[in-house]
Image (cartoon, rainbow, N blue to C red; front, side):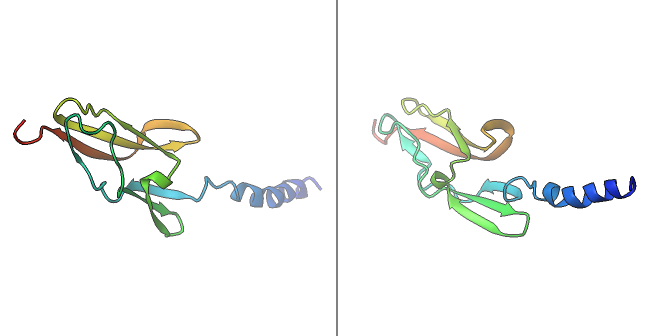
Length: 120
C-alpha cells in the first residue's frame, strides 16, 4: 500500500501541475513596426503618438500575433521626451509581468526626434 500512495499522488497531481503554464506560454515579445511619427516640431506637440506601432508576440506552440501597441494593456510605455527642447529622445516599451515591470522585460526602444521648424 505504501508503494501505491506515491504513484497515486503522482498520477493525481501531474495533470494539475502540467496545467500551471504561465499564460499562453509566451516565448518572446518584440517591437514590430515603428509608429507613423517619430519626428516632432518643438512646442507643437505634448505627447508621443504611437499610432502604427506594433508588438509581435511569439507563443510556445508557434503562433505569432502582431497587435497595435495601444491594444496591449500588459505593456508599460515610458519616455523622456521634452517637446520644448530639440534633441533625440527615447520611448521604452516593457512587458509588465504580474503588474511588475523590470528592465530585463524591455520589448523595444523607439527613437524620437524633436526639431525646430525651418526658418525659426
